[in-house]
Image (tube, rainbow, N blue to C red):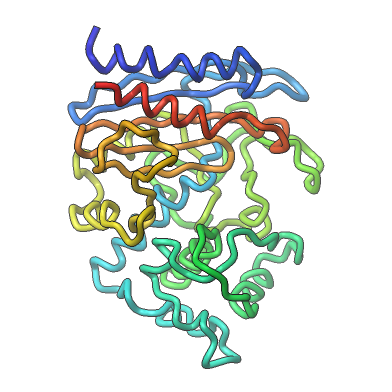
Length: 334
């Protein structure tokens, strides 16, 4: 048994325990190293209600906020490297209509780099979907709203605005943009891990985006990407190998902008999702639906934990925080 396989067997146990104790319906754990050795395994159910389906290694997941790091961040960094945008320029260099009726508005000073690192004053959460279902009007609402400034926090608004910039520069909506190899903006319901029994869409969501704001906007830069464990591991291996993403962009993904953030990603800090034993050269990110990806450049390996922890409801303590940390620690035991 290789060392990777040995680590995998131990790291898979917390996921198996969470399924057996019915904290989550099902999940996938996958790990890959710089040499291309790869292991992935599924357990539990992809759906429980209104019908039951097993989880398999081919199951598609709503990746939620992994969209930020797999889709949006690489594209913004590539535009910066090519000189199309300046990371330290304000968003109004591409979105001149942002708070266009108030030349002195603080929102007009926010830069691309600040959005990537969540160093802006936008709120953590905003139920944009409750203001209507017309995606064009909602975009105008987000751009023109007078947002109350507060201390910097992790905010979807940062990446919604970065998504607007991608749309403006490409002349296409997010959902008309190529999602990347192995990824999609939706999938067949029977091929996907089900998420929530949505109270306002009045159905169990499977194969369509769970994020309320992304649904109402009909595509956004902060959520909406679907993928399998294989596609997520392919992306991670590309970063480890420097294949498909430039060295400059990877360096920025690893460059800190705060004590907890890099350009787009999280970096290790006490209590973070990747556990206490990963190396300082690790970046990671999680998604609300129960997904996560961590890449340890120093040790040359990456792992993804994909679950449907919000099926059939988000209003339940699935223990996902502790599960992610336990898996990360077991993967990184020397």
